[in-house]
Length: 406
Ligand SMILES: Cc1cc2nc3c(=O)[nH]c(=O)nc-3n(C[C@H](O)[C@H](O)[C@H](O)COP(=O)(O)OP(=O)(O)OC[C@H]3O[C@@H](n4cnc5c(N)ncnc54)[C@H](O)[C@@H]3O)c2cc1C
Image (tube, rainbow, N blue to C red):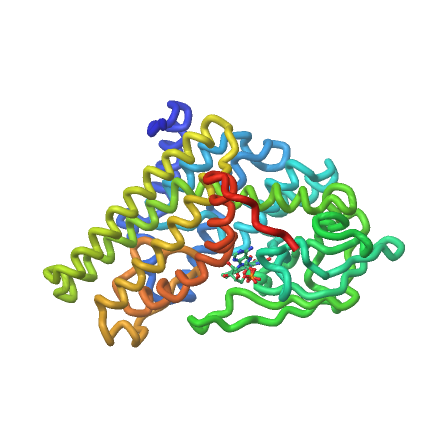
C-alpha cells in the first residue's frame, strides 16, 4: 500500500487549491451550510460552470475533446480537494455524462461520436441519464425486454425503464435495448443513445421516502433515435455496459472516507449538543463508527494504490461498496437515536443529493439527518445490491461454488 501521491499530482493539488482560493469566498463553510434549497442548487449550478471555465471537468480526457490528458490519480486529487471544501464535482447529471458515458465513449465511440458528444457533455449542452434497469430486470440486467428495431434511418424503441435517476433534468438517455429478439442473456443487446425530448418518450417521477423525486419511470412508445447512435456494433451492448459500470468505482475510494469523516464529526457534535456524549451505549456506537470510517480510509488507500498501478479493482470494489453502504445505514440510525422524537420532525432542508452523505458544512438539523437516514437505505441497492456484492465476494475471493443461473 502506498499512501503518498507522486510530486506532479501534488503540484496539481496546489493548482486546484489556488482555484478554490480564487473562486470561493474567504470563509466558505461548504455547500451544506447554504440553508435554502434553491439557493444551494443555484450555487451548485454556478460552481459547475466555474469548474468548466477553469478546465477542471473531464481532466483525464484527451485535449482534443476538451480534457487535459491527466491521470486518474489527478482526478482523485481533484475530487478529494472538492470534497474537503464541501463542493460537489459537477451537477446531478454529470455522474452519468462525464464519469459514465464520457469515459465509455472514449473506449468504444467512433471518432464522430467522440468529437460530437464529448465537448457537449463538458459544456453542459447535453445532460445524460442512465436507462438500464427495468421493472423485471435489475440485478439480473440481462433479462431486460426493452427492444429496438431498425426502421430506415432510425432505431424505433419500445419498452420501459425504471429508477432512472435525474431523467427529469436530462435531455439525453443512454440505454440498453434488445435488438436481436432471438438472442438470449447477454447476447443481442445494444447500447443506444437517445434524445429524451420527443413524443415517443414519457418521463414519470417516482416519489421517494424523503418526499423528493430524484428518479423516474421512462416509457418508450415508438421512440426514435438515429441509426448511427449505437455504441460499438449492434448486439455488443453488454461489453459496453460492463465498461461503463466499471467507471462508477475508483475515485470514490478517496472521497468516501472524507465525506463520511465529515459526517461523523457532525455526529460527534450532535451527541454533544444533545447531551448524549456521556451515555456509555451511545459512546460505544460512536466508537464503532469511528473505527469503521478509519478502516474505510485504509480500504481507500488500497484501492488508490491499485488505481496508481493501473491494476483492475476486482473484488476490492465490491468490498468497498458493501462496507460504506452498510456502515451508512448504522451511522444514520445512530443519528436518529441521538435526536429521539425530535429526529422524526424534519426541520431545515434535506440533503441536495439522494446518494451518500449530506454535503460537508451541513447543520445538525433533523431535516439533514432524516434525509441522510432515508437515503442511506438506497445505498445498499444502487450500483449493485449488498447481496450481489456478497455473491461476487463469495465466488471470486472465497472460491465458493457459483450460484445456479436460470
Ligand atoms: C437511488 C437509486 C438510484 C438508481 N438509479 C438508477 C439509474 O439511474 N439507472 C438505472 O438503470 N437504474 C438505477 N437504479 C436501479 C438499481 O440499479 C437497481 O435497483 C438494482 O440494480 C437492483 O435491482 P432491482 O431494484 O430490480 O432489485 P432486484 O434485482 O429485483 O433485487 C431484489 C432483492 O433480491 C436480491 N437479489 C437479487 N438477485 C440476487 C441473487 N442472485 N442472490 C441473492 N439475492 C439477490 C437483491 O439483493 C434485492 O435485495 C437506482 C436504484 C436506486 C435505489
